[in-house]
Image (cartoon, rainbow, N blue to C red; front, top):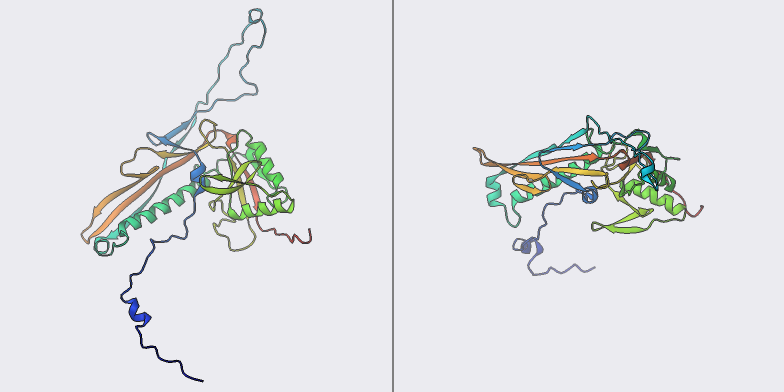
Length: 316
């Protein structure tokens, strides 16, 4: 067997020394599309406080006269009572501090500005936390603020079409979207496929989503599976929400502080804190957010949803 001839040419290793390397900006694998904050209606606040004034609802509405001849009957009198102690939502802050050595940012900021990239990644992290808080906050989170009458148990563990129909009966006044973990969305699709009723799709906010009864099902990993964003096992339990959004619809709205100094985006500011004696520049990032449920029937939750059932469709 003949030996491979030696190539008398410039090697790849040597050529690499003179080549320009095309680089990407930092890639943050934990980032998500954050569809919830895109489809939820938001309202800017003047002073960080939002008061929800509700009407005290009795057994019967305000009495009124229905008559062809009102001169022959006495017109009922009355008024509509308000809650004496309405709930007030106060914005909460999500903050972090980014430190960058100015010697590093001065020398190593081409083609990407080190300070800009650090701040951009920190902003994305704050926004991820904001979406998680809208769902899971002990104060204003949707899961914690769903009243008992709006909580539904699955019929058989699996997220079946009948279960989502039951949610619609609880949020029937112009429901806006379902919210579910991607694994729960897949589990629901399997149930629909098994029954021969595959859901149709729709385009919203630049994304494609499946729908049920014309209502889009928005995926988010902020509705955890057994307390985890990314469950490793094939089984687990989670929740599915149905939400009506919009202040005019007496739904769920997100809240933020409007007109912040050094505002970078909705409710988020970036402030330069100075440079210390070691030449380290510091930046404070603050995101002010909350959410309000204007009416009890604006949100309902399907609880204990099992995501781990699969089928052999050849035997069905």
